[in-house]
Image (cartoon, rainbow, N blue to C red; front, side):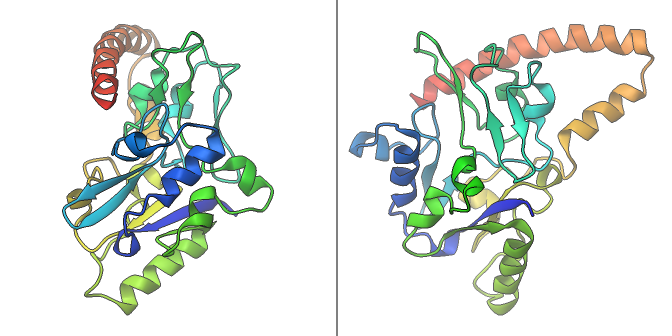
Length: 248
């Protein structure tokens, strides 16, 4: 069965233990200065955001049908049957198409490294493959982050909504967004109030792309995709670079 993470914002106390455990798992630095950063970056693969008196986590959503995998021309990104989307830096050619394709703006890039890599959470693929919990779920002191089979976590989330209707906004984020994700969210308020993107499609982005292309003649579609892709990628790359600059 596919693994997933359930994050319940109503249980999060903002202790950032998940951040520290994630940094240790990846061998990344973590100090007070990094802890104060509320955005994900090449040196911080999960982040706790503060929204008034509420908190939310940012991390890779490990989509069920990930756009990043569909655009990677060299197979550096792979969707595993276990659930996580893994990344092979040895295959990566640095095109950064994954950054441009991600609807959640998750992948980050080591802009200042001599041999830069793309960085993102892979939902502790190695740990889960060995039957362990993700580092963030294992250390969470309140149970705000749970890790397990996706179907079981969906049932758990539905039970919480039914048992405490006044405590929760009555939806599960990640259940259908972009065809479903491996990270699910519960919240006391509408999801946009805790920083989640609510304007994303409800269907898988790779399916949408191919359905549009199938409507066009081969020659026209190829030319249009190439020219349009070049224009979009060039402009999107500038946007990503600016966004990365703001994260630093």
